[in-house]
Amino acid sequence: MYTHETQIRVRYSETDQMGYAYYGNYAQYYEVGRVEMIRSLDLTYKSLEEEHGILMPVVSLDMRFVRPAHYDELLTIKTTLAKLPVEYIVFQVEVYNEAGKLVNSGRIRLCFVDVKSNQRVSTPKLLVDKLSPFFAV
Image 1 (cartoon, helix red, strand yellow):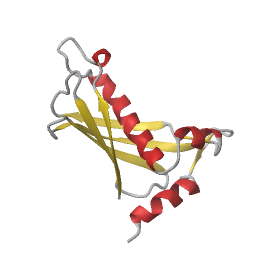
Image 2 (spheres, rainbow, N blue to C red):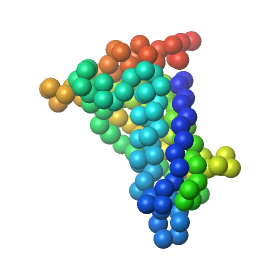
Image 3 (spheres, rainbow, N blue to C red):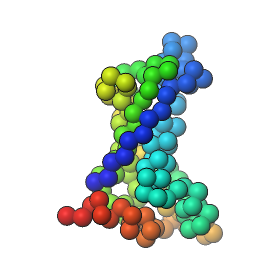
Image 4 (cartoon, rainbow, N blue to C red):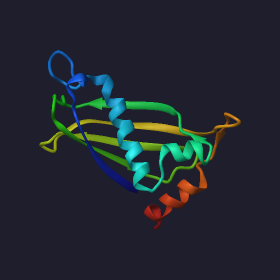
């Protein structure tokens, strides 16, 4: 299993009239979590796309809202890969408020697509190589 944490502050423009983080922004918070997780492996989405010809489109997204996050609150985004990706990469996400209480949780599944052919492909070897040590038995 591989887990990574990053933080983001709820900006004023991300809140609704009640001062709560607008529910539609959580997909962006999930993206921040997974982009930073990939970066923690010394890879970037940009390098996967431009150097390795791999895109990672979202296939599905499931979320559960537990309690509101508020304007100017520092959120911790905990992103976990529970298993080594093969056909899909599935990120489990938990968002916590400053008090350490769960605000939101969910799962986002992406596939891998070759830039040139626009066809689905298996998990790129370079990503498997970076993740394998975390899944060794």
